[in-house]
Image 1 (cartoon, rainbow, N blue to C red):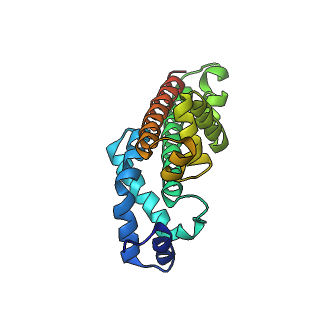
Image 2 (image 1 turned 60 degrees about the vertical axis):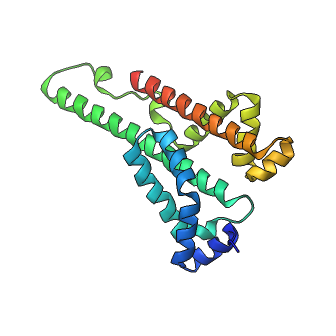
Length: 197
């Protein structure tokens, strides 16, 4: 009989490598697809995949079995992806700041030209990013939005979402796929606009 996610998670908490391998094999593709959609970089997605599953190995006890293990795992992946994107953006800002400081040492410019942007976009912290994500979610079609809310906010499984909405599981998965793809596109557009501003 195939072990449930709850059984495997309990075994992982006891450092059972075989259970970890089963969870990894079960969800690797889904987690990688989400990471790849969000960060648009294969190497970064591979690194983040390892990071997410390292968290599973070290912190499987954080899953309280109140929602599906898959939803918990995909939420961890989304958080890792957004953290990565935030780090990449800050690195670019720091590089710009260093360049401006080096220029300031060799030339005299007004202070307002030397200081890096201090607008709200340049200082988004994690809470701001979270709010941005949910603002983008509100732009989704009603069908995609309700599926996204059920899976990620209410943490219900695909089967339960399908039952609540009275639609096939395949339709739930399809709507979720297109919702994630649309959010990834909107996020990239936001990042691009921020870089140009």
